[in-house]
Image 1 (cartoon, rainbow, N blue to C red):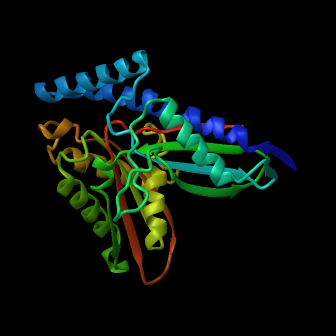
Image 2 (image 1 turned 180 degrees about the horizontal axis):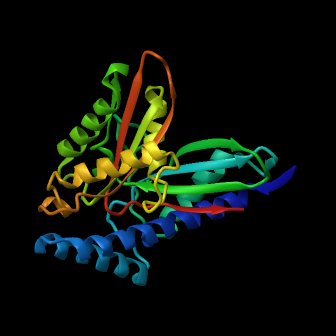
Length: 280
């Protein structure tokens, strides 16, 4: 059994919070460049170039690329042969979030109670998902999720008879209703199957996958491409000013479900779809 001190986890989460907010992932940057080259509408192209410049300034000046540094979502893949020592795993993660947001000068956006709405002033607690896997390693992925896009997400319990056409119709409806609000061009995470809550988890998890990698299942890979094409024909465009680039990618994750149901969740993320990860 391999032992990992909680202090290592706290430091890793602290660093990942800062990294994810300062530096845009390469797959997104490459998508910006490709979209700028292909965009025919000048205003849309200009906006894409501004987004590229914004990401460069953030990285060069060590500052957040967006004023909304998000609610911190943390995905943990914990090897079953790992023994966490020196404290509690969730406490260690939240201490890392606290340090990251204070020392990285990131905006604190979390309120301790959804009704009382008093800011916790350190962006804790984080939303934490823990998945037990084989081995003696731990993988930590930090996702700062802004709520301009989070608020545009939806979930629907379709009937099995609605089938794949019902899924496509719902995804397009959600993106169309969101319009310019989630700061397009967006990344669309889609979760299909499981239960009411698990489909939402799948939609969030879908946002972690690099946007230049399609689903390993050819059916869902084709669905991702078809949905992206349909979304970009809506004409919403970068920041909602029109153009062909409403979404940079659609990532779909699917899971088994009950014979009587077809849960579908759509989790929209803005052009600054941020995540950073480490494995040790």
